[in-house]
Amino acid sequence: MSAYCCPLCQSPLQSQGSSLLCHQGHQFDYAKEGYINLLPVQFKKSKQPGDNQDMVQARRRFLNNEHYSFLRDALARKVSSLHLDGTHIVDMGCGEGYYTSELAKQLSQTGQVFGIDIAKPAIRYAAKRYSECEFAVASSKQIPLSEHCCSVVTSVFAPVFAQESSRLLVDGGYLVVVSPGPMHLKELKEIIYNEVRAHQEIETPQGFVRVSQDLLTQELVLSGDTAKDLSLMTPFAWKFSLEQLTELAQRHSFTVQAEFYLSVFQKSS
Image 1 (cartoon, rainbow, N blue to C red):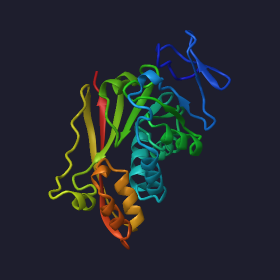
Image 2: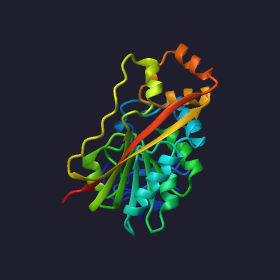
Image 3: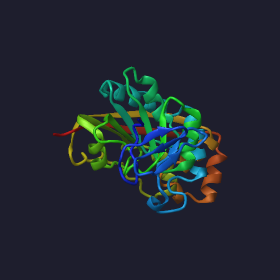
Image 4: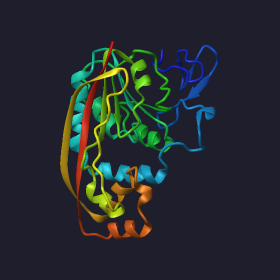
């Protein structure tokens, strides 16, 4: 039996060849890249929801240069220390799988790592590159996995859905969130804003208690092209003018501070 549930009727999905089927006859086929699309068309708010191809490619180029490897490794160590034998890990809003794959590499116990994202271009790339994980196109608001199947749910620069995380987690399970630190990308933001405000730490999600919070900081020295890619993968990418992006790409180097909160919340009883 597959670990997935039908997104239409929530009943268990059974593997049958290269497809998953439920007892009501709903069928979902695996793509040739190895991912499964569990986002029915009626659940979509647009034709191609999530990040577009340009954003995916910019993030892929940036992450492939290992500028955020210090964050990836710290996250993987933290999650590995929290994972319970025989349970799963879910990475909500996993994108191209950069962080998801490292979670799987660090996983010494039994269990599967699932990467969930609404953006098909990102999931397609993730599945082609990281066969050690299970990837699905799905909404993080309604993840097609059974209740209480996970000991850890992660959210890296993605919306935190507390109710859905609680549903997935075993009693005492953990929600691990990566969010911007106070001075994260301050130098980039100074290009587009007259006044740069510090990021605030995230509030404790309803139904959880805060266990720990670490602040990770590293100075990055980037080429102009890489700085442009970084700007395009941020939530404020649309604030940059074409002129500003062109000027940024032409710089010999650009120094920017990367700063992250790594927060751990435990499901309360």
